[in-house]
Amino acid sequence: MFDELTLHGATGKLLWLHRRVADLTHWRIYKTPRAWTLTATFDRADAWQCQQAAKYRELVFTAPRGATRFTLAVKAIDLAGTELRATLGPPLQ
Image: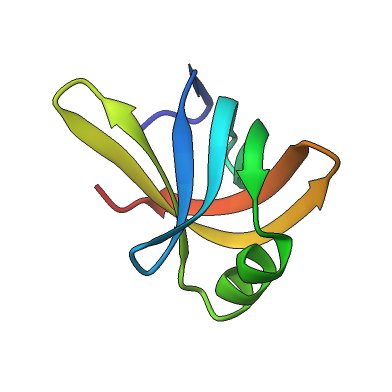
């Protein structure tokens, strides 16, 4: 496994169960030995649903990856203006 890693993309989503609660336009994930961190800009986000879903550990970040998708659980999230920062768990898929 990598100690440090950076991933980025142009589109992504935050899902609460199967409900889309945010549409991301640009995102970047930084993996360090201690944490996975997502930074992104978004077109649309429901702040209340994002906070509630993260609180109950039901929020996930997902983005296209070739024919499949990246999927990571969101542990905590902070939204400000059209930008977000989130702490992620390791990849689910």
